[in-house]
Image: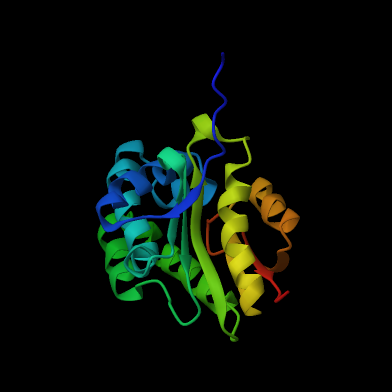
Length: 198
């Protein structure tokens, strides 16, 4: 008899699991236009993207809003209303790891991302990624949907910045609407998306 694989479950990431939760994000964003614009060298990306991830989403790990799909096939870092990325850690990281000629553009891009965030209380999704080996199986929708259900119950909105037209379409299928395009200097275009309260 063939055993059927159980439907993967979404669970909160425990403190001891941070490294395992960051791993699928590293794989998922290895070909991301914006992040490879920030860190174009493969070695640079491998070294610094995990630190970038922590600066953006460390509070999600600390507050229990970092989620994973079974066996760390994917991770979503959510920041609840009133919680923002650690700009005090992010700016020095950019200044210390990004090519000097590009540093000001990266900081300007991050400023624009912050400026597009809604003024009203909202959930912010800085990063969601699925290990490429497991993409196309609905795991991204599962990770996204589990929190959107909670958000809908609270009457809050949600905010995300998509760095690829394909990702923009994914979020739009889940009720997000384009708020504006973001671009600084030589950066690729990013898409700020808001999901109004339901």
